[in-house]
Length: 358
Image: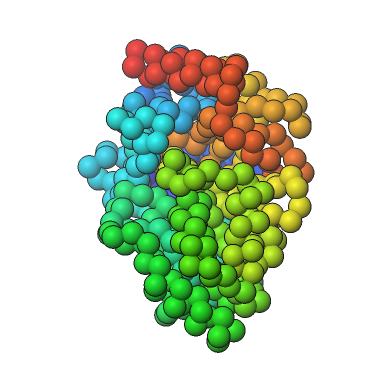
């Protein structure tokens, strides 16, 4: 990759804010790079007559169905030269896992740190970070394990820790540290997969334990339940967190991200409904008809597509299988595509793979 392109990308991410013209110019340069070096993407773009010669706006860059990461190698850099590969959990197709290749983690880490600082820390200094998810040694191909390790390393105090190891939940250590934080008046940040926090709440309830965490404490979950715990409605889940740990619903945050992206989205807590997800200036979201690719009118439901400049090595625009609609300066997430939309997603995958393998 041209070093000047990488430098310009990192400068754009590091800026306090972006503008549409600069976003578009950088997206077109990154698309040209991917078109030249990412051969499956190149084949699809040629069949659709969407090439660097014809594409004039980032909205015209073809959206790649998320399932393509399971069937194709989408990498502008030779994969043996990539520093890290993140892999999906395999919850939708257990036999095949999506792979996202990263030549290095400079862009991913910068994106995570800046976005996390603004959306989760919100001006707070370092605090005790309690991570309820395995560490990177146990899950070296998990983007979430890496993300949480960064959060602990960059925003945690020296007494921060992970509370899930190879044997499972370290409940005694978690209870001791939560009690200590309450006694000291020390704000804490609880981070983890949604299902991990369900297991934690259930274990505490079985012991009759509740806490009132000190002011400034907050909780962030991500990823849903994935069949790893009992399923809860969003209302019951966040009410459970609020009552178990004594925090306000406005301090219960949810992060929406995925292995196939390099940037995350956050809400501002669960106090106002509907909950709106927002991303930083280097990612833009549209709501599409999954089969035609046509953008839906504002407020109408469709499938979310994200154009993430952080995805410099794979594909810029990702067609998810998540339903939503735009609202204000963000979007409302409505869950997985069902019915006609799900069929449209499947057909979009089929058409993309046929073109990529032609």
